[in-house]
Image (tube, rainbow, N blue to C red; front, side, top):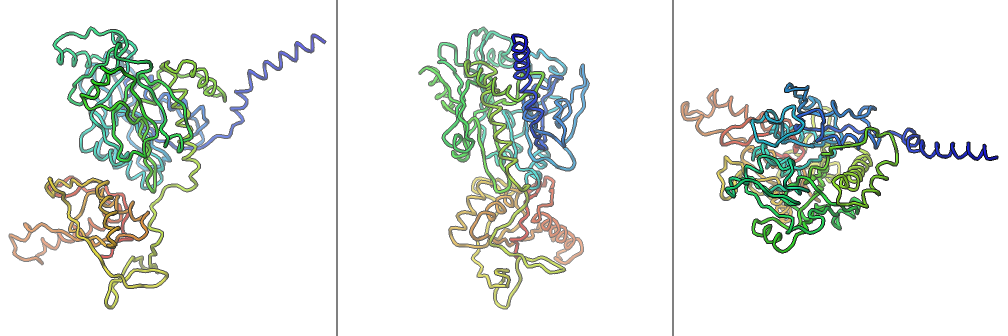
Length: 542
């Protein structure tokens, strides 16, 4: 009897031990094509996207039926060992369901192939978000891709100001110019060399700080230092907002101990979580004097008609150590609960916050039944026969639109819209997408139904018009002008001279491609440029 009890006990223990692995094997895999962009891979630890890839594989998320490979399944910088490398460009054809920009800071000459980096600022080898990158992302979001995720330093150096503005429109946030980080020990090698040299320049003395501390640095390399005596327990604390708890159904809180951006949302309702700084009165005053809030957005979610964007204002996917085995079901749950005992631990954030957050975002993505696509106003009808599709035509006394399966007169109530705004020259094309959207909403409230533009506007105009019209009760129609520079007439004094009509025809062709969202216009002084991906052709009446 004792023998059988012993055997039974052994079998029970083996079953309990093996059950997490067996359950994981029985779990149905989920297919999700995620395009990961990582330009900061100086060595073969792949640290900047290691935490993300482990999470995907543990959740049994598959790319074309196969596990994600940390050393292959990303676009960006590929270290080959020593100081040799290659660059993997973005795919020519986009097939991504989701795009995740993990890090764009880049790789610098002094860090290439070095695991124990000092943090010196040296010559950039590869990095930054480019206008081509942003154009690719915009085109993807107007096609198959449903979700865009970005992380800390997407906006910062070495990304240019022009590209940064485009990214602001995508994520619906702006960057203050400040970044920050909590350090467990100011006297450690974790403090980058560029911080220490900046300290010497600012205070005219060598870095000699020790103990815990909170560091802020702005674009001008100004340092704001909160010392240990000015800190309270858990100086940087992550917590969900009421909106985040409602939208994501997540409530976990944790200390956060790495780099973060100080950002401002365009809409407060987009903020799903925040970092709260726990400081004494002296520490609070230091932040106040430098215009840094005591709480800042940590997760911002902006919902568009065709896609969703998430901005994580921290290095969330950057995880130094992950388990070598991911084929087990309950490990993340076990780590989550054990880490709750020590919420101030460095790894607590990854298990307590990041994994549940990413699982939730992926679940929401997969619950969307249809792929993202260009959609038009639900109240619109397009006339279609064997030869053509048209949104409107000329009637006897009025322009007409196709409604209720027949042509109906449309009384034009229009607004002229130029390409400039106060304080800027027309050639600067300085109007943002959010400003265009705001104007369209006001125009709609006026009960106007049409806009006339004189020339090609920047991509933001067409993106905003398409987005507004998808949600509006009644669409705003577009009359698009064709602009030709007067200078071309000076020599011939003849508007119908061949060289002049040639330019006019070229501009008309450009506009046709622009309104169909199929144009890329190079930079041209005094004119709009960029990649045009928004199709507004159903709203064009002339």
